[in-house]
Image (cartoon, rainbow, N blue to C red; front, side, top):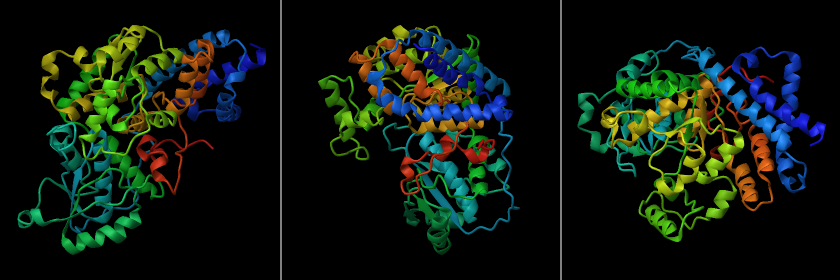
Length: 498
């Protein structure tokens, strides 16, 4: 490799070491210029990938240097993040205006989906209730979904803490006044529009609540816009999500115990490995499945009315980065990133589909794979067994506290944890880009890329995808495809450097 190429690679990996939160805030003007250079390098990466076949130079020296810098830098940043983590972002301030409460009516919401989809939807509905001056009844859960978890809100979240910590902002009641209870079966119900603005809630929703007294939302996920909202609204979303909405004491204590036991072995990594049978069925991604397995997951998808879809083109979805990485692909990527073989890796997931077969390569590459079922004694986990959302809550606690977090699919938990870790001081999260990784993996399997070339490209294309300060991407006409507010709550974080 020529000296210019080697210097370019070294510069890229130095970025990882520099980006702890103290250095970010105190960066000198010269360092800012250097950071801009590195951003230009990142922008050129996609062009580099397109011309991958022209990469003929040996990457062995860069791989060795890059691996040491990558892993050392990530662990250094992770430890610094842990030492400097505050329980609340120092950039959060309360609402500027004094709260004047008047009750315009009652809002009832049914939270749908898994734990994190429900959690973020509830946060939005609490903030909507505050701005409409309506009383929110403690959210109900749609328990008729795949997970069949009959947990209530109070089984998962600390209800008393939520109500008392937000009493200056919004009134939350456990049940209706006696005079309204008799009317429960006749409440007017509707589904609010997706990614709605405050204007929508003022003009379309508030008049209905005032007219009818009570309004029921039967779906609540992604019903508030990511952008274009008052800053105080966005900051209240953060206050509710990161400060007011916490898990029950039993869940919190058990989650912290898992973290404590893992810490006894040193720094640890949380791998959010989304390869449960329901995830494979829901996405229709069948990479690496046998014919019988394809039939099995397709039948599962068709057995759920909410998951039914026209024929899913699995190859196209995978090509565009819409499929979770398989356990085999994940093992390859972790090795390419330079994650040491002896690293303690906590698997935050449900039961992996055909686990014995599909996890074999990952276990061989990383023998220190653990789960909550391994870390805890059976009696410690017994209260949460058969409650999927409560088990997921334990994983959430471990994920936000880990030294490094790596999700293999950009689902609700991945986005929620990413944002929470930013709020906690930009803790290191390696945000795998499947759209970049899939062609690299395929080229490596086809032997058009050597291992050294593959590993170098994985590092180069992810050197900036580590959960550090960046501006949220906005796509006004297609909000579903823009950056999710809760993955990067920038209004609640230190000002983004221009």
